[in-house]
Length: 299
Image (tube, one colour):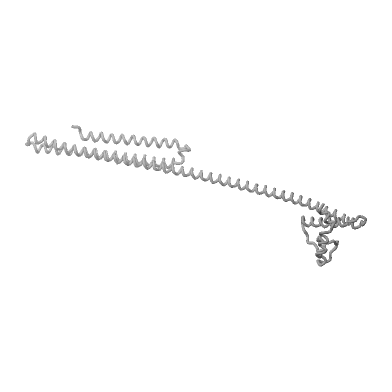
C-alpha cells in the first residue's frame, strides 16, 4: 500500500505547479501590457488593466507564500502524527504480545482503513479548494468581460454622440445655407420688383408726358384758332380737343394736385366758369349735342 505522506506530497506538488503556471501567465500578461503602454489602442484602459493585473499578481504571490507555509505546517503535522502513531502502534504491539497474530492483523487493517478514510477526506478537501479557486477564476473572467463590455458600450455611446453632433452641425449648416439662399432670393425679387416699378413709372411718365404734350398742343391750337377768326368752326374743334386733352391728363396723372373749380374741364361751351350755377342742363346738352362735336366723334 502506498504511503499517505507520498500521496499528499504529490498532490501539493501538482497544486504548486498549477499556481506557478498561473503566476507566470499573469506576469507575462503584465509584461506585454507594459510593452504596449505607448500604443494608442491600449492607452485608454492601460492603467485600469495594469492595476488589476498588479493586484492579482500580488494576491497570487501572497496566496502562494501562504500555501507554502500551510504545506510546511501540514508536513510537520503529518510527520508528528505518523511518529505518534508509530509509538502508539509499538506500545499497542507490546501490550498485545500475548494476543494472537490474527487479532493484530485485524487491528493493523483497521488502522489502515482509518488512514485511508482520512486521506480520502483530505483529497476531497483539496478538490473542493481547487473548485473554489476555479469558481473565483471564472468570476474574475466574468468581471473582466463585464468591464470590457461596459467599455465597449461607453465607446459606442461616445461614437453615437459624436455622430449626433456632426448630424446636428450638418443640419444647422444646411439651415444656414437655406436661410442665405432665401434671403438672396428675396433680395433678387425685391430688386426685380423695384426695377419693374421703375420701368412702370418710366412708362407712365412717358405716357403722361405724351398726354400732357397733346394737351399743350391742343391748347396752343385752341388759342391760335381763337385768335384767327378766318377759319369757321376751327375754334370749336380746338376747344373740344382741349376739353378731351384735359380729361386725358386727369385720367392718367402721375401726381394729382388739388384743382380749382375753374380748372376742371366742364362740358360747357365757355372758356371760363365763375360758379357751379352756370352749369345748366341746357348748356351741357348744347355741348354734348353740338354738331361740330358730334361730327368729330363720328369720325
